[in-house]
Length: 416
Image (cartoon, rainbow, N blue to C red; front, side, top):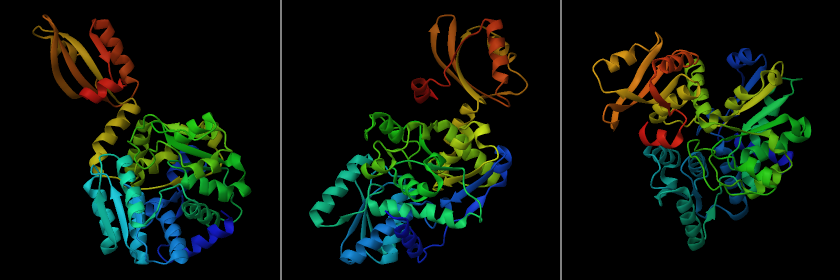
């Protein structure tokens, strides 16, 4: 990949969509005492940057082999939507393989973007089964697989994000820090390749979800590794194995330049940006801003920072779960198992322990643990995190038996 080739791809891209905005965000700039610029990939036609790689891949493939081939992709999210949009633009037939478990909203959006040029096939319960079916289809039909990240033309297409940033920054302004999300590595390898020579490698911070740190673990190991377990909450970046070409491009970075942020912290970012700025972010799209909030404030203060907002395809049916996770991470909500005496007035005595800013959000009797005592699941919300320290002290003083299960992943998944 050369910068000249990326610039050519960027110019060619203007035939299907204008450059996405690079916006100085006043709220974040005041909060961190810095100039915080947001590259708004959530404002592309498909609400993510994935349209770029798909466009560049098909543009080159059609120029080389013509438009008679069938193009194929496997995706349950943003790659499928970008692929579908580009197939319709070039008027070529595309087949999109999606897991049977894909939400109907994503299926409908992919169909809307592709129209009559797209066929959707639902195969398998998980992505690996879907991807295997796509590869088999390609082998049987002679079609061309359009990968989500592990291909030179995809990387080159995603690098146009960096080319636009370089062109959009005011004259004389140079970023001290560029923060970008990492999933399979297409965006990060393209952007660091384009901006690295002018900014230096120390200017980059790459961000992964804590439940899918494929790049960080690969850098630690010295080679690409496959994660044994992946948390799929950040579905746009939950990748078990970094791409081979992508890792080769990123292997020069120390693992300290990759930050893994907790999924619940990402939920705080989503809710804050929605409530304060009116910006809708998907979990992967919130990765960069979550990292910004996790940095030492002194490392950001007075600096010029560019953060890539990579996508805004958020399903609002997930909002209650996002709010729940955000409150738990912020220390505003906790769950307890209480051991309460089975006698008249026991519940009233417990309620008298609550403070003025404490509210019961869930109350459920569980099975009895002994003849004279019963177990209760209770969820408590409060206005300020420090309220819980005082509440627990009152629990102790009253001799109330309790267990805080807020961060117990096994119990939380079973009963919360």
